[in-house]
Length: 95
Image 1 (cartoon, rainbow, N blue to C red):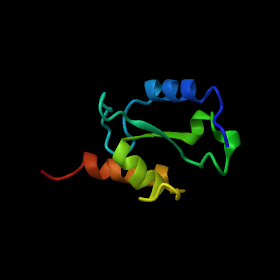
Image 2 (cartoon, helix red, strand yellow; image 1 turned 135 degrees about the horizontal axis):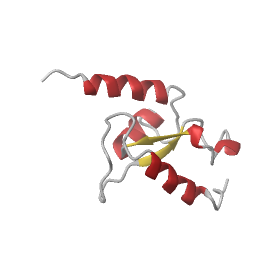
Image 3 (cartoon, rainbow, N blue to C red; image 1 turned 135 degrees about the vertical axis):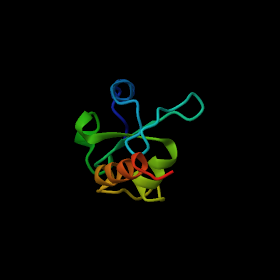
Image 4 (cartoon, rainbow, N blue to C red; image 1 turned 90 degrees about the horizontal axis):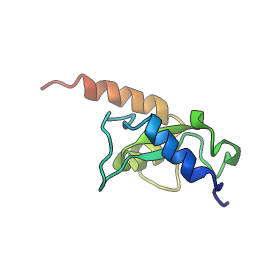
């Protein structure tokens, strides 16, 4: 299924409004930009492709780990909850 011609602008606007990774709280860099992940996958819910309520910002490595459970063909229905839990753990880690 082809992406909407509006997707690139929606992606850019979402990253501008939500620049920090939902898991670690870091802003992406030029060489490792943060990515926008569809909470409900595009291939199953194409009607939600441009819905900002269906998007979450993830660091590139966390996109694969939290968004796709280490397999790009998979998806994590609990990505928002998992990101919140790990963000809290990271924020409160012992040093």
